[in-house]
Image (cartoon, rainbow over all chains, first blue to last red; front, top):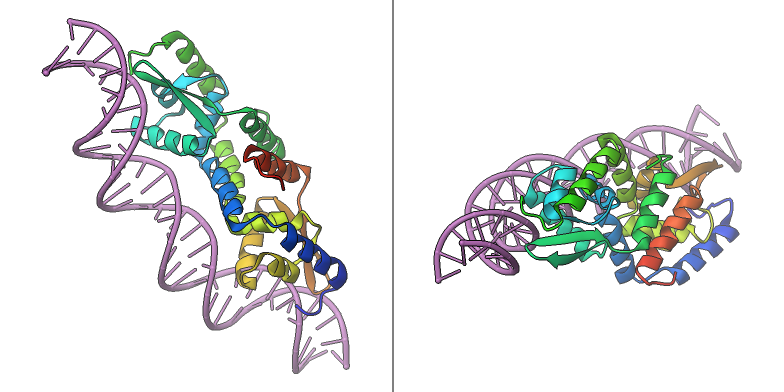
Length: 116
Length: 116
DNA sequence: TTAGGATATGAATAAGTGTTCATATATTAT
DNA sequence: ATAATATATGAACACTTATTCATATCCTAA
């Protein structure tokens, strides 16, 4: 604790870290966004939407589960701007929000050495 | 439900989605990794480690909180290969696991239009 | 081997979250 | 306006999880 082998370097790093640390509010916002993609049921929805936009019924068909559960998850993804929605008649059509989301998914897969 | 305005396209997309959907086990693994970076306290640790490797004491100093809490979070990050550890005498020095993690953080920031 | 500092961990409690069920809202057709 | 289909949502329960407290483990110095 007061006996670090690299006191100087680590102390400097810690000081820089404090200086550059995003505000609590920003950290929470970031964490919330990550949390949005950290549930299997929501991840499945994202993988499904990689194949193209879909309405709630077909998303439900693609990922399984009940319409209600899917709808709740879509809400969370939407609130976090991971996906976007547009109404089309009786249907609401969902799609991935932007290229960042696609990149994020690819990156994560790469990290885990999976090939989707 | 049985009355989708884009029955054909969506049905095809749903079919492709089912075909290309990662296995349950893989989805869970991915979700778990995202979950690891979806808590403010853990995100702060990652931001801190962007400034260079640090031992537990200095990480605690950089992010705040108790040693015990930080240690618990380090464990989770380590288990998910988000960070790596090496012992150096009495200290354990932590650093970001790989370039994917760095890229992931940058991407997330970009998505939220923040500039860290 | 003993003492002291550095890090890790088990148990418990408190807070957060996903799903289900029932129901509400919205849109189209009649 | 009414009926039917599609989607959304509030409440409740079960489950997960972060933190704290106490303590254990690991390492170095003497």
